[in-house]
Amino acid sequence: MKKGWEMVQAEGLRFTCIRGCTNCCEQKGWVYLTEQDLRNAAAFLGLTAEAFEERYVYRTRRRMRLRKPPNAQCHFLSAGGCAIHPVKPVQCRLFPFWPELVEDRKEWHRTGKYCPGIGQGPLIQIGTALETAHQMRTAYPALYENSPDS
Ligand code: SF4
Ligand code: SF4
Image (cartoon, rainbow, N blue to C red; front, side):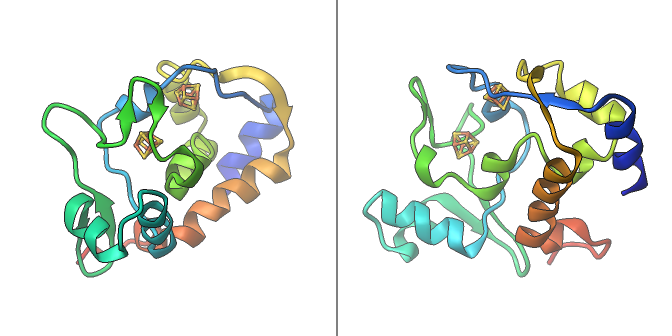
């Protein structure tokens, strides 16, 4: 937490998502889901939660993530953007206000190399940035503790 405070106090955080950009969806990595994410996405697509999970989800004892299609990062990334945009998973909705980015100046700037919205737009209030990052910890507790998965 201290690093985050030092960072925002020193230079603040500017961010606005750039229309038409999908760079963050194209980065290597996993898209983790909450149980609510799963239910929301299933309903949005007109599927049962069970059918959605069978088709799109890989679940371990303590985590759930989207499966990846061959040669792509996400099943839901289409030419028009995210096909489940109104119900996209928490981590997609909160990006780039993830604790590991907001609380580490170098990571924030490194992320800005592929996210053109970083450094643009309004200055984000310190409290807002840290509260948003905290939502990640609440949504995905298993990702933010030291114990190994599953
Ligand atoms: S679910 Fe949507 S926002 Fe999240 S990575 Fe996939 S396409 Fe991008
Ligand atoms: S990379 Fe940044 S600007 Fe582009 S869609 Fe993601 S959050 Fe928005």
